[in-house]
Figure 1 (cartoon, rainbow, N blue to C red):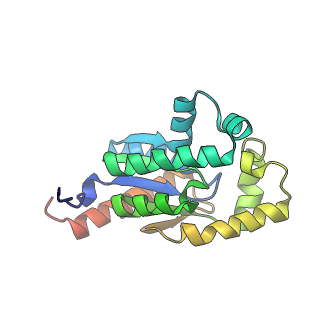
Figure 2 (figure 1 turned 60 degrees about the horizontal axis):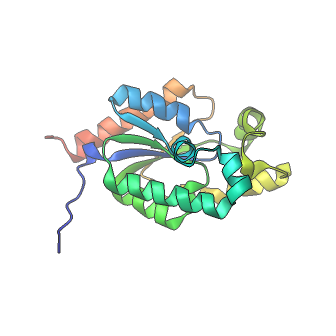
Length: 188
């Protein structure tokens, strides 16, 4: 049997999680640039591989199919790649297999924001582009927001992004990562 060795902290993928519209893609691109790493937006990668948009996948093949493809891709990226910045879709991290792979093989950052901030600042920007929001009342969306918090609570580090510009949030993540590297792997 082959013995698995732990992935050095400096080589682990950095994984951004959080509610839809939190800024994972924008912030992830900035973090990737600052750390000279490749950036992978999981939703965009699924769209590329499937040859259709996420709303089209939901409409034509259903959410269960989408979640299966999403789970397989994320687990593969977590276990078979290094030195990447990954941005997960808002619902991806709800899947236990995804959480386990991310926590075991990456450094997971939760981009946290308050319901009030999200509702006022982010919802108007994304409401028409997210299949999960389709035909939902504000109360149902609020319930979804708070239901997901328990999954998001399982992370390595948290950045509260209310009122932060994307650049500021990216800087906080990079500073946290460099601190982790210095503390846990000082001689690398």
